[in-house]
Length: 155
Image: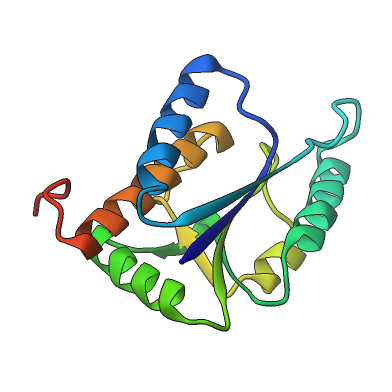
């Protein structure tokens, strides 16, 4: 079973990198995880142009069989158990691969949102995209643990 993650930018802070690696390693016990890191748009560009360029890269990185779960503050919040049930369903579908998408610091374009099979929110607050990556990986590990009946998640 596979899970793809497509993220804009690399983790720059060591503590984010260490946390992401921690959850990737744990998640790797359950799924083959493909991680795609796209380059940030050049810093000198205006924010809207950065969003457009990053959107093009995100859309190009998505495969036709990807079930695109795009993180967006306007998306649907999923309690951990519901995310676990969805993840089970998504990973058991042989025709699709769940692909979790996180944009850059300036957000997403409507074109990326429109490509989403699901807009998913980690809450209604705005989070730094580097922290979102760690939070998403933790939630995916939590969901996998729930699906395997492991004691990581407590109701």
